[in-house]
Length: 456
Ligand SMILES: C[S@@+](CC[C@H](N)C(=O)[O-])C[C@H]1O[C@@H](n2cnc3c(N)ncnc32)[C@H](O)[C@@H]1O
Figure 1: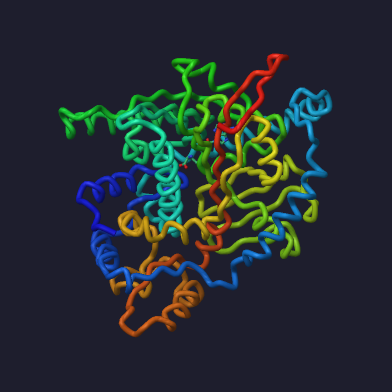
Figure 2: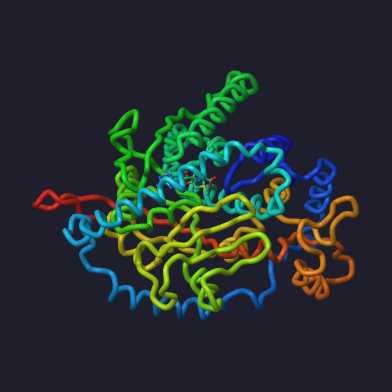
């Protein structure tokens, strides 16, 4: 790969400073920046990455088996007609309305309160590399789909994006880099959204003074709304607008509280997309979550940086919707989330004309993109250097958290002195996540005036 341009580095640095929840921060001292660059500058032969012990990974075969079993059991569980308007479902929703309000309030209060944490505090985070790594995954995912979309367009064509559950604007720089023309940001937490708008304004001002004479940064609009309950299209500046990409990062799982909420979120994505456009995102992998839960005696498991506490009882057959757990992550996220049953998601998405494209655990995604994204990994400081440079202590427990790195290095030739990795504790968190993508099908209207979807 070519060496990063100075501009790329500046961008990555700014991005680190600006990113929030699931994102990155500039905790690492300047001296380490250059060291990371040194590691990066090693030849591709000597630059190795090893994230976790293999023993921790569910084997691909086992996973495939799980998925197949799950698909068939899901077809039995999921009603073939998933209409929200069924009176049964409405009754259930009415019964759950108070509970849902409570969950929503907890989520909103939690994310709004995050603003009070200054950047300095985030920079002290024990999980900074994991946040940077997650941010790298998002960058690669967004780039992958922007490239796909651009392939079908003429040079210089406009490209519009909806960022559902955008938070404080952790992905604004990614959108700038992708050279999009318009961004719609939506989030339930009004304080987060205000901060997102502020960041956008700062980028506009900075870009205006720096890139005089060049095309202006994308235009943007900001919508405070519960994306699982409100029809977003009605709130757009131009309600007839269609976008090329809908992105929902680290958030879609909130919608699996109930069927109607999941449907609303999918409908928002689907009806905003052009045919051929993509819906992409990142969510916890339910198979992995449930498998860890099943291996635990009680309902709680985790390590020194994260814990998950299930608030539903049935470990063997959790409900398809409302399978609630609390996720605690080094003070970053601690509010109710819900299992996303993949076969159900696929089936529901299809109902809204969203054809399944991919679901890949972060581990697999990293393997697929680590060469292409090598310099960005370095720029974003998405991996910790092991063994550390003497003035940079390891963030994990040196006795416990790096066995996999030591083992990996034992099999490398003697001149391989440094590798990039994540501590075992961080890896146990990030390996829970997966990327997903769906493609919007073409809509045709049948004789009853109802939409039907065909491959475009
Ligand atoms: C983990 S943060 C991710 C933020 C951003 N997508 C990112 O990757 O940096 C989750 C976000 O989802 C938002 N959220 C949760 N439930 C929501 C809902 N029902 N409607 C809209 N936003 C929601 C929260 O307010 C929060 O900003």
